[in-house]
Length: 288
Image (cartoon, rainbow, N blue to C red; front, side, top):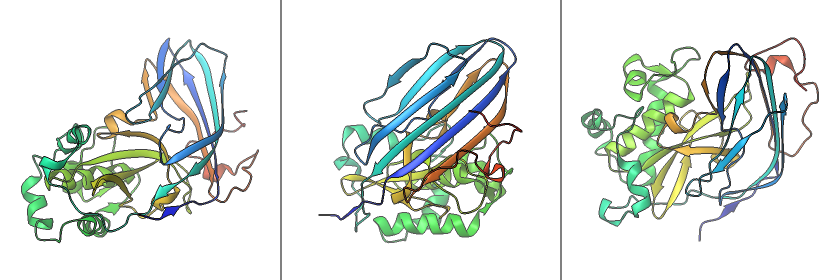
C-alpha cells in the first residue's frame, strides 16, 4: 500500500477586489475542492456588497463555483479555509495501456484548447519515446521542461498554448503544466491540470498550476516548476486545461484592483495586515 503524507493543516486566505465598470457577471472558482485527497475542516466566504450567489459542485472533480451579477462599483471577496491534505505518495507507478483505462479517464487522453497533443505528438516521441515507461517518464518530462523552458513572469497571456510556450521557450506555471500535459497525452498517458493554493518562497503569492498523470490506477501529482511540493498543493479546480480551471471568469467590463493570497502550510496564523510585497495586485487600503 502506498504511504500517506499528512502534513499539518494548511491555512489559506484569498482576497480579491474588482472595480466593476458596467453590469457584469462573475464566475469564481476559489473555494477548496471537495476531493478525496483533502478535507476542508473550516471555511468562510465574505462578499461585499451583499449580493445573491448561485453555487454549484461538480461531483466528478470536486470543483466548486459560485457566480453572481454585479452592478458598477467595487466588488470585494475574502475566502478563508483550513484544509487537511492527505495525498498518497507517488510510489513506483506504471503506465496503463489505453484498453485498460477507466472510462472516466479517457477524456484526459484527448487534445484540448491549450494542450494540442496531436500537433506535438512527433516531438513528444522524439524527446521521450525511448524513456522508460511509468512515473520515471513523467518525472523526466517535468525535468526536461524545467531545464529547457525559462520561468519568466509576463511571457505568456490568456491564450498562450503549450505549443506557444514550447516555441518561445518561456512561460509561467500554467504553461509548464500545459506542456507537461501535452507531452503526456501525446505518449498515451492521461494527464490533467490542477489549479490550487500553495506558498511560494519568493513573492508575489498567486494561484498555482500543476499536473496530474494517470499512473497505475490513480492520479499522481507533479509540479514541473518545482515551486511547490505536490503534498502541499490545496486543490481548487481540476480539468482538461486552464479553459475549465480558471479562478475567475468575467463577462462585462471590470478591472482587478487587488489580489492577495496567504498560505500557511505549518498551521501558523495568517496576517491580518499582510505584507503588500506579497500581493499579486496591490492596492493602498486593506480589503476587509
